[in-house]
Length: 564
Image (tube, rainbow, N blue to C red; front, side, top):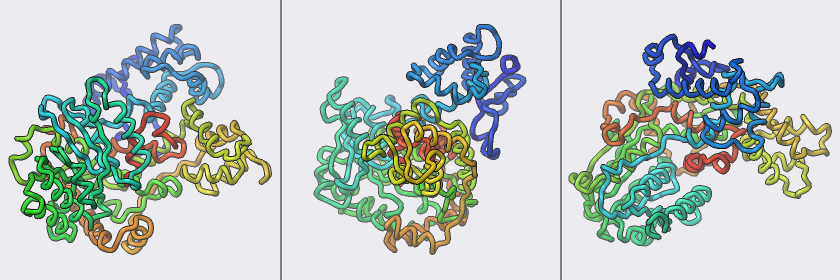
């Protein structure tokens, strides 16, 4: 009754990141004014009231509990979908520890939030184009590459403009197959449907290192986007100017868009800044590139770079950084980079070609640290793993994994088969042996499908919670990692270390924020923060969420885990 008398809101991750361990799922205030004064919105209040009202409607005897038969209706109304067969029983079994068949309002909230990481309604903020501001002409746009994080998001957003055709640049034999399959799926859904032409969304072979492939892909293109990963710094000049030269050769390109970085703005003396300036000079002033207008998007440190440490975070609970984790950074959400770029690419010609070179800086809403990101990720992972992920959707995922791992088809997983299965999902050999021996009393027996599902679910649910810690990696250690694991050459390493020196000096923080372009005016919303990124992407760091992108409509994670 107390929750109905007071004003409640679902608690935000940002208010909980300093509290490691169990915390209430919601917070109550005496009045609506108190809740609004604490930073919550009227939409937050309305959402909570809707949950309360739905619960009260189904709680017909006003006991403060829902019977099993009412849970199905509650989930169907609040999740806006019909629960899968058996899903309700699995979810209730996770919470109804005393088996009395009753679920409280608090427990129902946990059920609802346990769905949030995986539900379509809570997917990461999408990239949206304001059609009222978009160029009304028939335009063809090329994205090179479309298999990276930002490129994928930008291509899909621009495809929603009815008069735009999108070409997705891919590299034969080098593009991530998971993302290629997603792009092919999008092409199938766009081409020849709902009045769209057959070439609305095309995949084209395109290599930034090949003038021939670039010119072929650019035929008839009006705007082109190009970007090169930071760990290939030494290729920035060659690959970007190759695009400029090809654009001049075909004659139809009216603007080149380039995602670079903020280091030139922050410290022009750095070797990485000088490399960036070489690109700008060649594109803007050089005859070879035809002096086509250059629109440069300069993001600060992108928080999704944490994905490069995904395996270490999952296996060891460590976040090893090539700079001080306590250094203040105005880190940017990758969706904001995609949102700003896509919005600019959609603008009418006169708004983007009136200058030879236009710069747009993009960064997060505030200064943060990777120490804090580690805390947020610790909290989010612990919170999700405590739920055990025993819902039917997760169980089905486990069964699919079992069938894949059972290579000889005998219905039993040996230790060898289990090791291969779990190693790629973030488990160490020691953890695999522990799971195996919980059921198997000797080394010769194996795990049945039910044992595999039950034991892995139990292991996740009862796993000891340990916070993730962030550490600074010495330059020598990072150099070894960069050359052996990332395949970087000495020049790439030199340029990248100069960028990290900016962060250690603190130049990636307040200095970055002072250069703010009007992101809100261009994109129509506030920039996202590191906490948003953690909330949206925690699933990719958890063994209990493996194959998430295939089973729960989280296709965006496929991009983000592939492009690091």
